[in-house]
Image (cartoon, rainbow, N blue to C red; front, side, top):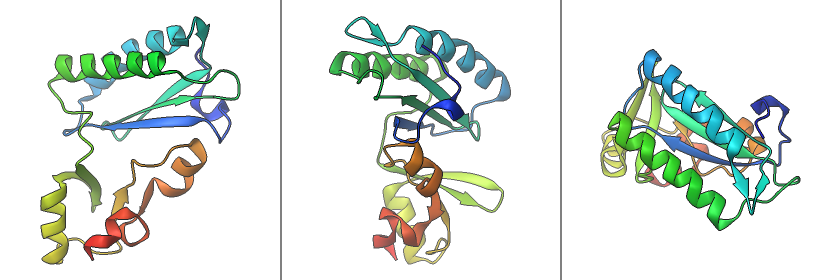
Amino acid sequence: MYVPFDNLPEESKIWIYQSNRKFSDDEIDEIEKELRPFIENWSAHGTGLEASYLLKYNRFIILAVNQEIQSVTGCSIDASVAFVQNLEQKYQVDLLDKMNVTFKNGAHIAYKSLLDFKRMAKEKAVNENTIVFNNLVNTIEEFNENWEVPAGESWHSRFF
């Protein structure tokens, strides 16, 4: 069952998928038209999940589930991963590779391999104050507080 993202409790579980490129506005419209029915039909053992999604910066797809109502299961997680894999194929993007870093570079959002980001840190092209997207957050509360953070306050700090 779809509910607006802002109506989910802060303890809701989230999954963040970052794209290796920015989606066009038309692609975002198409993705939303696919996401809404997926969320409305997403279930665990036949019970609908109270869930939502958020699209940020034309680059991030965030799925969320209120686990106080119904817990996600292996099968429901598999269904979401299959959905994301279909998006990858349709739009020729990488959404599942967690070995990349997305960060703010002025008004631009940059996407680099972990090795490139480490090299940039060594060369001082990025620093502890560079805003990174910490996609390891697990709940809406963590998302709101610790998703966009200075690199020095995230797991990226080991590169400085």
